[in-house]
Length: 388
Image 1 (tube, rainbow, N blue to C red):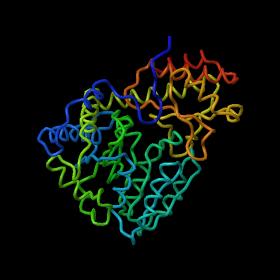
Image 2 (image 1 turned 45 degrees about the vertical axis):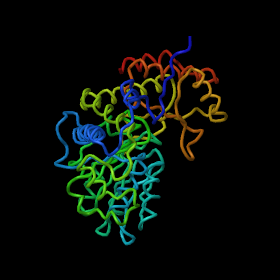
Image 3 (image 1 turned 120 degrees about the horizontal axis):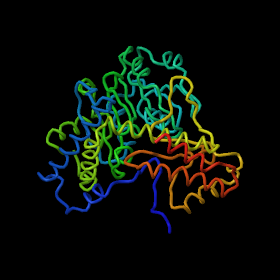
Image 4 (image 1 turned 135 degrees about the horizontal axis):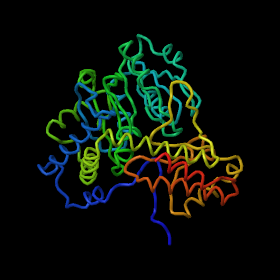
């Protein structure tokens, strides 16, 4: 009998029945009191996630506001940059993967952008980071968890340098917030960005920003795209509204998703994500595969996403391996950009169970065997189970 479909892509991730059901409720006006109550629930839950993503659950921010956006996190990335710069500004963007590159491409549209680049999957040279950030730097952008490679970047260390030069620090926490630690004040973060479809385990199409009280006075909504004027979003958020028509079903789903996170508790959720990511790493390496990213230097392996190098023989026809995975009713992701055909990636974001993690390990191992790779599936599953 075919096993139930298992989605292990790094977004969208599986959603719970309660989140799915929330979208089926009857439609209401986005200017109604009923919708305002939904927005307030979602905002309160997001405040909890943004402000208490620590292993002890204590507050990590002295004050800020969660803003919900009718769009995925790329909209949030652009909004954060565009509201803080003008054509004479300088942004320093750290790039060691696809999403760091996306931040830099966004900044290029608005002002002068200096890139600090590292090979995808490798750590930044912190001396180069310190050299690039100067008194002329207005904004520093960083991807906390680089989904394209499976690395957790040195957010605290970069934030310290940005703070030293009075630069605003904008952090893409899209695939870490809701699944790993985020310390707003300790890391000198001014704006943090996340996405519903990632570790929050909500549907795609909705995202959120956390803007600290200190950064609000720096916003210039007139310089930003009309739809992304954060001054306007902040004013409307005071009455639990968005400036424009809200995606009512998605807001309902997000409200339930963040309430489920609060029910689990961020400390327990973080520990669960860390254990599951470790199980993927231990399981795949025990069966004979190799991790793609290099966690030497001021980086660590991601706790929500695992990237594995495809064996040379598989790279000759990677579609056969991915097809063998798909035949087992499991969905995983390949590499992005120039890493296409070189790696595969699996997510443990959201609400996956231990059994689903083990099935992911077993499925990859069986698919590798099917395409002729000599792996020890039983050893991999056993190592993953022991970690869990």
